[in-house]
Image (cartoon, rainbow, N blue to C red; front, top):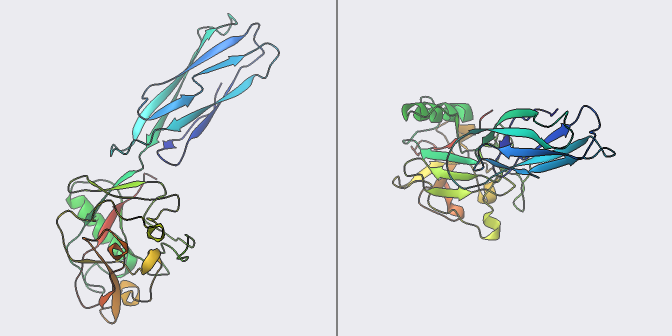
Length: 273
């Protein structure tokens, strides 16, 4: 007998399978554990032993394989087979079906948009623009805009670490690839950020071809600034932008720009719910 496992996730979530026998075996009994797709996950250990006088429950850890390759969700199975020992158990087979969710995601940039005009009405409007752009590219995943307003979306409130995140679009311990050429743009730490404070930079600019600025609302270290065009609903005032061709802190904070201007959005793929 064993418990079900919803999923494992690269870089973040391993899973535990509890394996038990209905009764004590008459002899030392060995259960093999085989994962159908070793590129998705591995089983630790790959064998279990149950003895007549020992506990009749043990566990297997399914360890996701973080391979830095954009591959999407990978289904796999775990086969438990009694291969030696108590003849009442030998030959019994149980199969667990599960999946490994990728920690490799895509990003892309939209065309220039102006806060408060058209669909760009707040954070949700920016998300709608990103989703429509993803659909136009034939991508079925959910995408959200990498910008903040301090109320509806927050990346960070602590310049020396990470706290206060709300509806943030990046995941911890994940890799983000430019959709246009599938080159790595950046990887996040366990705080779901690139920690510029420790002199980490992006691996590559956010866009391989598009130059200029994109709306962010962020100052240094991903902290929300007051420059966010009335939470992205107005053409009055200023909004913080990032530089699409930068790899340092200016990639998220390249200063303020007038809200009546038009700049890009950076759209970020979200994990499977």
